[in-house]
Image (cartoon, rainbow, N blue to C red):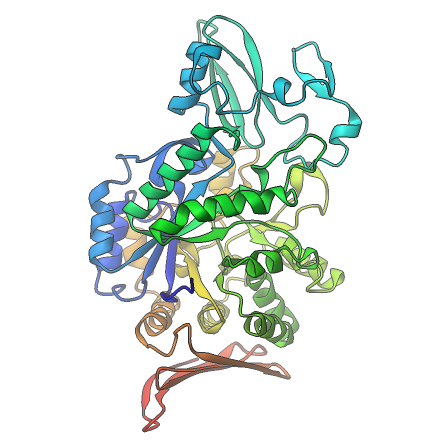
Length: 512
């Protein structure tokens, strides 16, 4: 099922602009912004959540504090469809299902809803002093770990007994004055449980009811688990599981966007595309930065040509709620170019994110895209133009739109591990109003409105990309119109224009 709405997609938390989703809708309804976006990716603090800024879901009800059902109705009235997250691998400790399990133990209908660590690894190792089964090395030598130590959270039941459960991602244990423990954590789901499959089905129905057209499958590659396997992107288990979810989503006409970071050389993006799914273009952010540093569009052309030749459907981006992905470029750019890019971004105030301390395992730099570009307005506007003319559906991080700078104060407030907050600044209504007066914001909005308005940017369009010297050109032809972008990386100059094919009349133009 081809994506018909290729218009720009805003990306934000519900409280990113003014403090509530209602204020973001006000922003989208405003005269300065109306018509710039046709979609909105709302991050999962939209739901009832308790940890990891939304990715630890208690349930998929609208949280009612920073977002309400009527906000979604207003978005639908604007003709804006949604991209929403479905976190397949885990639910919060505070979810009704896990709380019922803690209270009732084996008498709970949810006793198999989550993964009892010791039961999963029975016969494969020995218990340690905390009662956690430690698998023998032969079973976990190839396993992929997101954090140091075994991925478990030991919880205490109402009767005082304790049991470890599989916990791939975040956890937090607090003790009150009476010594009672309160657990926070993202507890892995047992995808073989009929109740989990029923939960998946009901969630997809709920998201479609909210107005979702694209559902981002977060952490899907961790969900299928087997003894002795890598337990990340297991093959064929991951793809069999993804097919199950696809079958569930089909009645609701949802497009699924499997979210996964893997190097270009591994070819995972190709597998996802060949199986008929949209591909998250995690390559574009680094390639655009590289093009500015190298003053060449050759690698952008090469990647665009691959997208077009293969027919893959992509959602592309510059910045996002996570860091700027650079691991993905391995095999697409020479290693020394990646290292040079990392050094440049760190020199501009970014922070390298390595996977649980292993240097260069996870090439991600936490920075705003504007700061990564050297806080250069001309580069920011050209980067946006490149994204909007590149093949795919463009997703726009709100802070990039406002040319936001690295937020070191937010990092400090977040403490250890708070590097991601560098690019998650919540803007007040006054901040937004002031930013809308800046030319770097106004020019991005003009580009966005053109991308949303003109029918040339359609799935049936023919796209040509050419790179010569320090220049790059991208041309779309469709719906009786031609849209062209000509740019030069040596001085960040560009001309973007849209013409009527029949008469040659100029319909729109923007230059710098």
